[in-house]
Image 1 (cartoon, one colour):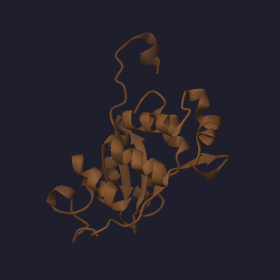
Image 2: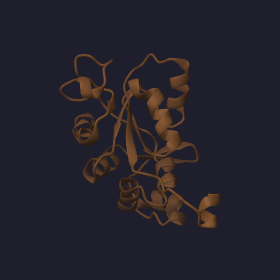
Image 3: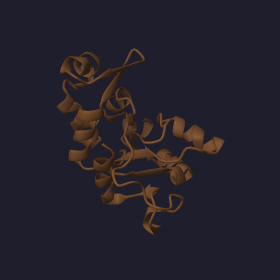
Image 4: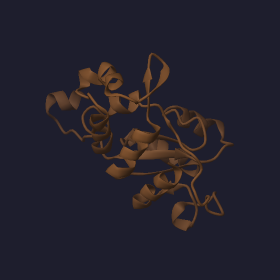
Length: 174
């Protein structure tokens, strides 16, 4: 923040990532890291902005999650179908725009479309928008998981960076 106000070298936050938790029995240190973005259950999903700190945390919990940058369409489908907001520590469904406008109106997020836009573009109020959303509770993927789940995605399993294939997984779990 100080570098930004002084006009010095400033690196803005990079792309956002979609995080899915996939394994139940976890060691204490990675479990604590997964509690920070509220990934408390299997098949939960949250949106996280990627910074240097979050990249280091991702490396520590990589055997337990799958992540990547999703397209606009899966983000839109996820928010419309399984979106819940956090208002006064209660889980409220996003059925109308009044719920969003009353909570996020001061950040120029007035409707579900604005919320989808802020999440999908990782815009200036991404943090407020992602904090407003409860973790998405998804179902098991249709067609099941791969055979061995303790290998990296590149080696033919489930965890790690999926790159462009995250959209297919979101459709299977939504």
